[in-house]
Amino acid sequence: MLRQPAVAGYFYQGSPSGLKDQIERYLVPTESRIKALGILAPHAGLVYSGPVAGAVYSRIVLPDVFVLIGPNHTGLGSPVSIMTSGQWMTPLGPVAIDEALAVAIKARSRRVQDDMLAHLREHSLEVQLPFIQYQKKDFSIVPIQMMDTRFETCADLGNAVAAAVSEQKREVLVVASSDMSHYVSAGEARTKDHKALGRILELDARGLYDTVRNEDISMCGYGPAVAMLTACKALGATRAELVKYANSGDVSGDYDQVVGYAGVVVC
Figure (cartoon, rainbow, N blue to C red):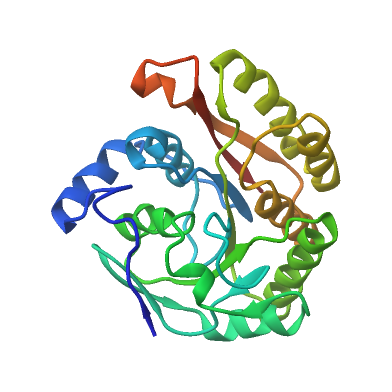
């Protein structure tokens, strides 16, 4: 099945030429890129989060396969929803789902359900694709949406991803799609967000989960981030790097009510 874009012309430019121009503005020229096991990347409208997303996608070597894990904002579908076949369309063309890896991940977790409904109107994974498509011609994805963000579910998913990737012996990037604090002052956002980012930089999945919950941090994709960290640690990650942090006020000028954005690379 072909999954049509849900937010083209809204979260990002809807024409191929317009989208290419938009992505080009956000990518950062670099002389060297690093191989990564995972990243944290934002998913707001690109006018706001594009500079952070562009910075993190510019920092890494892009592999042939991407496991995309994002929060379910719509409430549709299963608690943890994967698509195991089909294609995703953006204005830059279709992207195939990696069926072998998707099926392998699903087989390793009873919590993961094959369910397209969760993906139809959700933006958190869709907005990642243009950054990859602009830079890489051939690649495949495994899309996963999370509505159940209990720690046990996050850890289970992360371990399932790691086991499937290890068995297939492939270079895969695990992408956790998340914005940081929502609709607080810029100062409060920075303080709270850096508490969460501190746990991410320590590769501390449980610490991230507890910090977000105990500090009441409105990080919408903390579940995907916990799953990503769990997977990367199991795959041998030893360090993480904060590439860029910003907030919506840097664009709108309103620093009283901001959304925070962070780009992190896990190696």
